Length: 137
Image 1 (tube, rainbow, N blue to C red):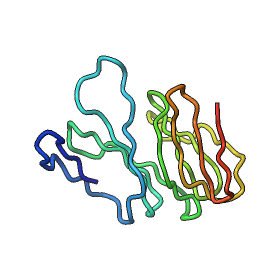
Image 2 (cartoon, rainbow, N blue to C red):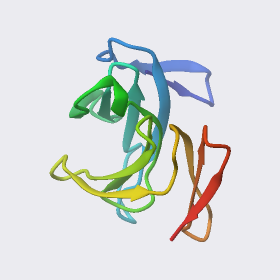
Image 3 (cartoon, one colour):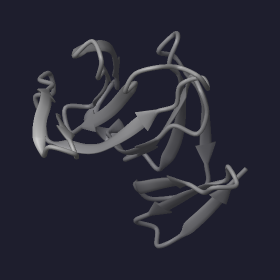
Image 4 (cartoon, helix red, strand yellow):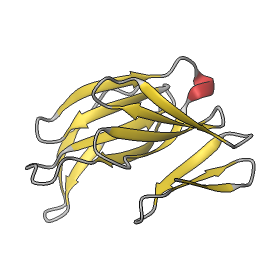
């Protein structure tokens, strides 16, 4: 995972840790008034989600999946302290970033969920190989 300075087009840091292909990145929301670049989450075909601190230039957490069937294919951080991932096992999972635990799952797709998006109004959209787009509250 590489971080770039868009003003200078220079590489700021290269995070290493995934052993599979990186599938998606998400900026992790921080409380208002927080300083610094913040956190970035990445998911990979190695069945892990890694959390990176851009300012400290280090990995600060790893959320591992139990099998390759549970790959996370896309990520979104809908609110502070939470991360939602679209999963290959046809679910969306919600993680608490403080504990690293799965605190919820959204069921409704019948095939792998390939993408997730947060809309400006806070609703979440997911797309799946079942050819459906679902809207979540």
